[in-house]
Image (cartoon, rainbow, N blue to C red; front, side, top):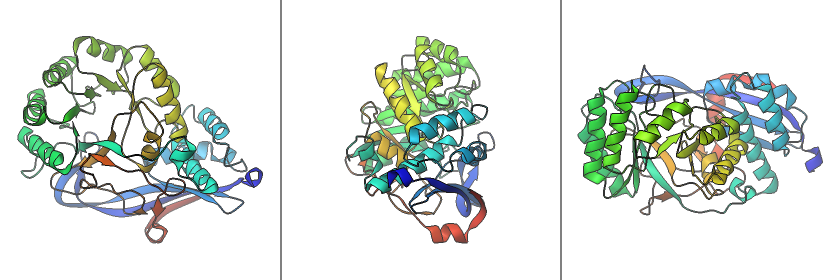
Length: 389
């Protein structure tokens, strides 16, 4: 059967859904708390069909990733769906002018298909075992609403709430538009309140204007022994030289490479001494196949790889890799539920309260990714649909 498991077509779906109590930060853009607001958002996903009737399914990622699919998808049709390495390298070559975006979501769907074929969860195909995954609560961006993340004290209050729920670690996303004094004040407030009870991280998401301001922020992290900080300032997170300089002047470990794509640039960043931890993302870095390569490369250098977000694919990866510390869950806010697409029926919970008292969550357990999608909802709210065959 494996010799006949040929890809017959790929379908891409765009689905609309309503987001309430959130807006978009104009500077990033990313979701930001905006009580009473509502807007129409779009989620994208795909299905890979085979001549045996088996499908690989995945919903996730941004529209820019799916825009890369037409550049390589014709070369996927007719190939053995289980030959993911060949498809990975062919797509990587075809997308060399397009930041290799689009490869990730296809690869994830192929892993889902393989798991269904072998009747096993993806983590088992990767050589892993089911285990409880230690999490950190990752905050939403800072806002300016009285009941929101509008002050250093609000971040400290929310950290205490997360601690009570069972989280052992907490990551701060500050404001996109606050002066450096306010950004530093958040580090101080959270550090004083829970620094002796929680592992702390900071992600300024490249919002700090100047290298000098980033230094001041890093020194504040030093005082409370933050576990890491990441993407401090507006180089966009891509300059190995600049981050090597930060590593020389700030003691807090640096986590970089969220904004570079694929295996080789990650290794270059490590060799250039631009980071202490490596960031991997199945959407951006060539799917599950790509992230496994990055994680093993980091292991060869003796450093850890941390995943960007708590998607289903990442939970399977974390069950299969030694050198990872925490699963990033979020983005959480004290006054609103996360702005998530509604098409996932089952597979894994992803709310603030979806945490055990041990600070852990579990991976999906069914075949493939173990995620069930609401195809009735997807079809009913479909706003665009492309078929490649």
